Amino acid sequence: MSTATTIIEKAKNIGDGRWVEFADVGWKGYSLLLRLRGPRSFPKMVYLDGTVSLMSPGYPHERLKKRLGWIVEETAVVLRRPFIATGSTTFRRSSRKGGVEGDQSYYLANAARVLGKDRIDLKVDPPPDLAIEAVDTHTSDRSIKVYRRLRVPELWIGDETERVILVLQIDGEYARSETSLAFPLLRAAEIQAWATRPQTNSDADWLHDWRRWVRRTLRRRARDSTAGPSE
Image 1 (cartoon, rainbow, N blue to C red):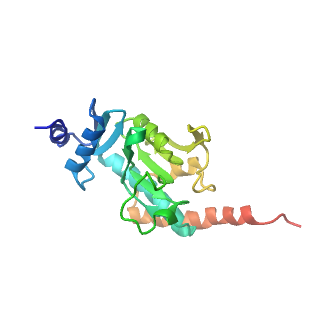
Image 2: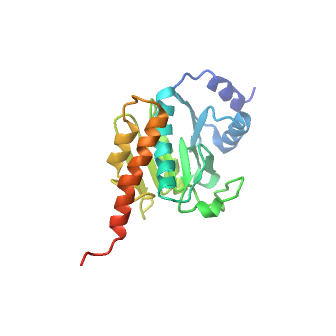
Image 3: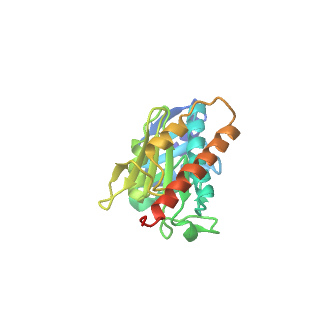
């Protein structure tokens, strides 16, 4: 049995919310792992400098990821911002020795450049404009390093206690930001408050309330920011 097959077999026994790493895999081994896994989203993989990390998402992780994704999607719809949702697509570059699968990822500024494509190739296509990493029982450090190498402009990283927006700088490093690069009128504190809002009703109610907030608050901010000075 090959090393890659052994890893996949072991990954089937990873419990919900667990994160394990396998060193000295190499790029060919990583590519083989992706082929062996096929179109399934389990296990989620991150590759960095010869080490593959595998994760089996648990319920809290999936709940947080969905809410953060809804914040992006519903905000874009209400504000009429074009976007292409790429979910947990594998983004990788052998020359950067990194590969990552975001919990959610989106093309916004570059949506037109990938519109209609059935395959993304980072050798010719831009990376996603925004990626989301919901952190439950694992660290996001390795994923952040890969995103930086792939030059993803904006990351939303967070757990149940904190939501951090990271924006790529000219020097190629990430820096924390209080507002979103993709949605400049949206603040990190507001993302935090809505993502961790207690669930007293169904997701349909949460989505309804978020849409109403975007229409009332972000639309007003947009109008105020484009209005000329009062006479």
